[in-house]
Image (cartoon, rainbow over all chains, first blue to last red; front, top):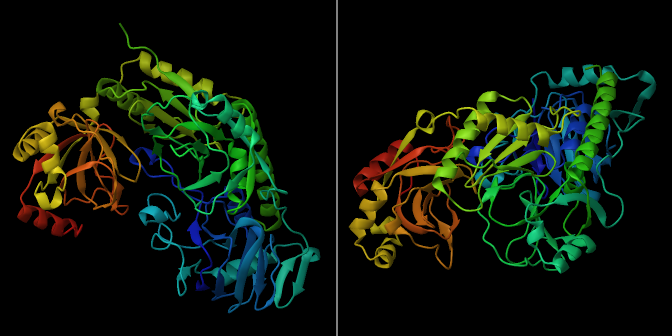
Length: 337
Length: 241
C-alpha cells in the first residue's frame, strides 16, 4: 500500500508536528512550516494530528496512488488535477486505485499539505517523522522527495479510506469525474489576504540596541521575502537595520519566529528548520499565531510588523488553538473518528 | 554572598530565556547546567525543551499544554526561583566524561602551525596543552550535536580566522575564543583546525544521537594516524583524508 512520486515539485517533504525535547543537543523541532494547515489536512481524512503529511511548496508534486485512497489537499491554493479532472481542495476526496494527482503552481499561499487516511509511513527518527534536510535525517531518507520515490501507507489503506468516507452524511456526498467528495470544504485559515500581511511581533531582547531610525524603519517598512529564503529562515528585504553600538552577542537560544539581524543589517525570521542557538542580535519575536500565515508567503511576498505584547500574543494563540480544535472536532465527528 | 538571581525574559510567546550573563564565565555556565538538570527533574508537563547555552538557559513551552489561566512567564520565574533556592544537582554527579580520540597530524590540522606560532609554543606543546585542558561542554548548538567546549588552556587563546573556510571536514577539532568545537558535519567554519576525530559526533540513528551533551567533561586523547584509521573503520565514519 503505497504512493509513488512521478514528479517531485519544487520542494516536497514528509512532515509532522515536529521533534521536541532535543534542542539541548542542537536538534531543531523542524515539522510542518504551517502547522495549522498540517493539522487540518489530517483532520480532513480522519487522521490524528500526529500523522505525517506531504508538505508541498510553491510548485506541487505529481503522485500516483496505488490503492483507493481518502486524500485531502489543504492550505495554499494549488492548481490540482486528478486524472486531468479538477481535484477539489480543502476537503476529503476518495480516489480510485491508479489515480494520478497532479498539482501545479500555488495561486495563493505557498504551502499545502497532502494527507492520506492512516498517514504516510516513514521510520520514526528521534521521536518524529519530519524530514530535517540540513542534517539529512527523518522523513524519507532525510531529503526532499524525488521522482520514483515510493512512500508506504497504511496496510489497510483502501478499506480504511472507504470506511472513513462511508461515515460522511449521504446528503453531503458529491460524485464527479470518478471521485467521491463532499459538498462542503474547510475554510482556508492561514492564507494571508492581500499585500502587506501584518505580522504581530514582540520586542526582541536586543531591540533597545538598535538606533532610533532602525526601530522606526522596522515597524514602518514593508518587507519583502527574499528569494534566498527557505525552511530555515526568511530573509527580509527592506531598509538596512543598524545597531547603535555594535556589541558582541554571546551565542544563545533562539526559537521559531525569532527575528535576528546579522551584521549586513538584513533581518532573518527563523522558521521551522532554524538553528537552536544563534549569536546575532534579536530585534523581534514573531507571535506564534502569525507563523502559519508567514509560512504561506512565497519569495516576493510582503509583510509589515505591528507591535504586540506577550499577553496579547498568548491570547491570540489560544484563540487560534481553540478554533483549530473546534474544526478538528467537527471533522472528527463528520468522519466518525 | 549568594549569586544574583538570573533575569527571566520572554522569548516570543512560547518560551522564556533565563538570562545569567552577557559574558562567558565557566562557573556561571556550570550553574546553568545544574539549573537545567533541576528543571528537567521537575518534569513540568508544559515545558518540552530545556536548552542550556553559554550564558543563558531557554525553556520552550508546549502551547497545547500550557494552562490558559496561568501566565507561563510568571510560572517559570517562580519555578526558576524555587529551583535556585534549593540545593542544585551536582554537576560532578550528572556529567559524563567523554573521551574523544584526536589525530593532530598536520594533514588533519591545517592551522596547528599557525596557532603554535601565534602562541609562541611548539606544535607538540599545542597538542599537549589541548589534550591536557579540563574541557567541559558549555552548549550544543549551531548544528545537531555541535559542541561548544570550554576550559581550553589560556596559553592557546587565539581569535577566529578572519576568513572562514567554505568547508570544514566532519570530525575536525578547532579552537578559538578560549573554546574548542568539533564539527559534526562537513560545513563552513572559521575556527582554527588543530586535529580531527574519527568518531561520529552526530548520528540520528544512535541513542543518544549526539556524542557530547551540555555539561559533559571532554578528554581529547591524541592518537596516531593508524589508530585514527582503525577507529574510523570501526565507527563507520569513513573520514579518510
